[in-house]
Image 1 (cartoon, rainbow, N blue to C red):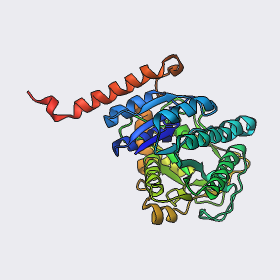
Image 2: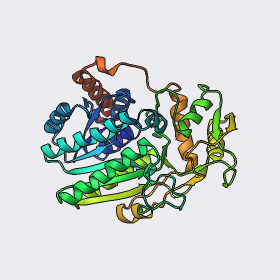
Image 3: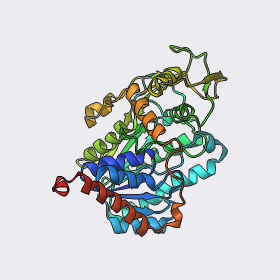
Length: 370
């Protein structure tokens, strides 16, 4: 299958691209590197022995997007690209609506023009808002509480209405819970710019010495240890969910939605303690005031994905933190700093192909004969 991945150089995107390549798909990546690095695609090529084709483009540039879809003619699109920081969305709501919603509209227009109507959309459990009825199921009422979450909700509604109006479309919305971890090689992982917005990368940066301590927001919740409980899912399991959704859509039309989570919650202190064990060192933390809008617990009911997609999360918290620590220890400051816009697509793609070629040669037994 020819698969176009928007935001394919990012955290979840790069792990999904790797899995797609390993499964034999032909992969094209669209990324503007606003929160990612082309180094991730070089490393994906080195891990898989195969190269994705990169296009540097912004989803707000409709002309460029039409050109990319016209050239690649994909069978399906996996749509990761988007801004994702809750706090930033509160401060800059118009930027989030413009980037996430308008960017998705441009993508849908380009897909329609190219005759591609299979889409897997990267949604979020934030569409459930502050719902406290647990576990969260796909039919739980949606009510996002911040601009980021509302962009995901608006896009879900837009996709549902599109599929209802045009029966040729096949659309899946995957509601992630808390993606964590990294590829077991330690070669690709989460590399947030600036101060991490999520718990696990912040804990990792404290463990590696980049930050002094973890602020734990609230220690008096009605949970096992007073700290917030969340459903953490390994990024490799999450990537596998996208391939399962692609297979499902290949046989059906309409609009579908699935939770991707483990169905189990871990507290903030349980995550910190697990990370301390993995790194074999103390991870300092302090309890501070709760954040407005945070709920005590949040976890998925993943049964629908298991029954319909044949998918379930395989990796537990211990493996999540072990893989995350391996990535952070090998890459204490993430991917090397670079300015990708200074290199044209042709040069970046040549670097990616070279990395794949070297990996393929190294694993080919016929090249090691005397």
